[in-house]
Image (cartoon, rainbow over all chains, first blue to last red; front, side, top):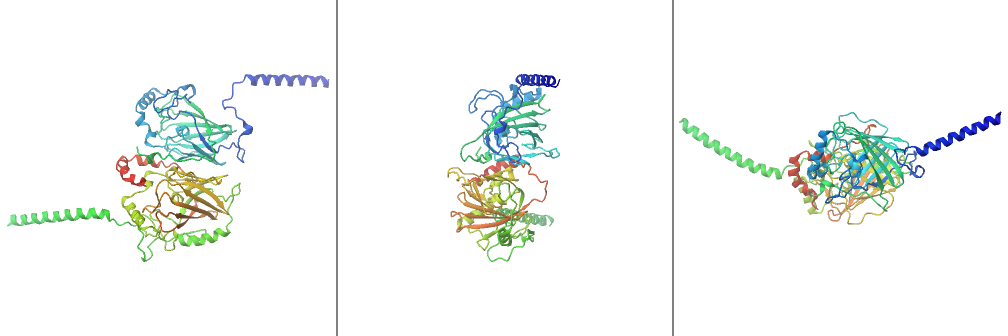
Length: 255
Length: 316
């Protein structure tokens, strides 16, 4: 009796295990890219240590969508999921107008802070500094600082900032931010993609391994887009010996 | 009769008006060039300038020379809090003391622009910046032309950064970071012993290297890109100046700070400024975006005329 019960429970366990294995083989891949969780550099509090000097290797600052090369602009595969930005009809007309006038109308040409998320993919390095309560992003481009404050509330608006106000939390090994309080003086790229002051971002920073940090951002702006949309790209660690952030003080150059 | 009087009246009026126009047009022109600067350093031998009294921090007077002597003593015995890697923990938000306003780091009287102050220069003992004669003349010209890279929202070079706006200090192993409320700028100070940049890379804030000497953070600044103005009146150092800053905690809420400047192009000898930082007492304080350049750009008149005028701020 006992041995029969034991035998049948073994059979049940084996069936369940096989079933689970079969299910996991067929499961849709997780949205978060696979990470080498065990080998990530970590802080004393166990969170992934994002600190270091990072930079993109893409052409998103010129155009976040697929684009051919043109003079001074490298070709690039887009960073927008599905390569489609769901503009409302009026906003699409504005984007097209922006594109036509981009060489003078892009606020970045006035040495304004490129805003978030564009700041993240300007082709210049930035340094992440990290403590359990605060993460700072120090950008070489226009020498500006982005503050990410952990587990705290946005200040009450209305406030309009180029970089918005960022509050964040850890979801497992992923740093998840919530960014609001934007102005409408920044674009997504040189191609005229734009937003209003109602921009709301949710970003996900996930380390893939020591030298690769995946960046994903969900963009929401009911004044400009008909639905939320997503961009993603990796940041690469600058591993050169003695690498340091230098200067690009845009407004100091003769224009 | 009446016509005669009125004719004379008219003649006198015209004459008076002409005199007024001539005198005032002449006056106003020369007056611009010679406008008294309310916070200029009084000439040597003057009585002490009238200032608002100084406060006390960590049991020391805020008056620079007194603070310097008092803080040097306290620095010998104060045991600072430490970071997990064993370095003195300077983290938090800090405002300056000693240099109360940014008008003039030398002695200057109270004015509508500020509370006045004793000289923050503790060496040489007369509290005067030891300019070579040509450089003293240049300093005076700076104020008259109102030249200051700050008009362009450019980062403060060393050592002005150290007494500029509120700082947020973050420390991680191998680094000290100072984030500035002014123009959203920051300083990255490696403390890992790496060499300075080569001479062909110049930076607005200088190339900064830190090291810990006991409880003191010592920062060497070299490779500055341009002249650094030190205050509103136009005291300055050349891009080739060697600046050494020293910061020591003398109380959990007070840091004693000095900067020594060696610049044979501009000065007759090295000189030292002493001042302090006090912890921001508001535990909820956060640095928020300033958008300095965006603000400047919003005034088109300023940029069209000011662009030409303040271009001088970039003259080497």
